[in-house]
Image (cartoon, rainbow, N blue to C red; front, side, top):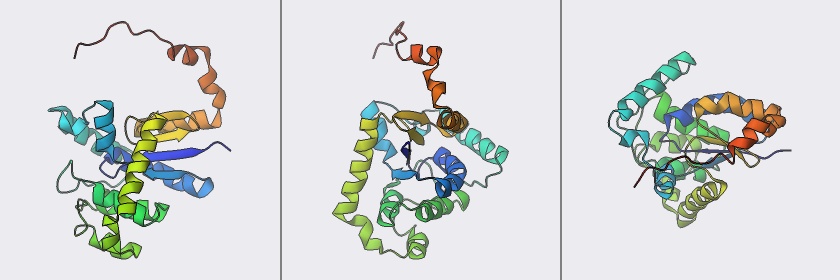
Length: 208
């Protein structure tokens, strides 16, 4: 069976939106849930996040809220964004990166609109998941997050959320239908024009 991995960060509202679609699928087939540090991915790829670009930040926030309402998903932004997601990511790992843990953390930050940037802010979720707050600072957990992020980079991930189907990557909440189509019809990506795109020449490069 084709391996499915979902790379995500709790800082991303688009990850929250796609999780609503993936959550029912997790019960039907194995999907490896892989929390990664989005900021480290951006730095490795030499990119800026949407929230770091003037004008694009507000548009992105309004767009994600529109998408949520259109999809019938409750969404409320946390008190500040972007925020430091390391505590939430480490909590997820401490709790085993289970669907229940992912759901609880996303629900706290993006459905309820609560802060998730430190252990104190996440205390109700920590208690609900039955873990110890001290565990978030364990060296093994910090290492696990680095390893997840490095593995994502090796796999070619450049943004979150990303669903990998075997070696193929599908980036973004708005690519979810594309991913499902490719999952159900693998021959889709063998189409001659799809294959030609892999070798499409670069016509011009922007100077640094």
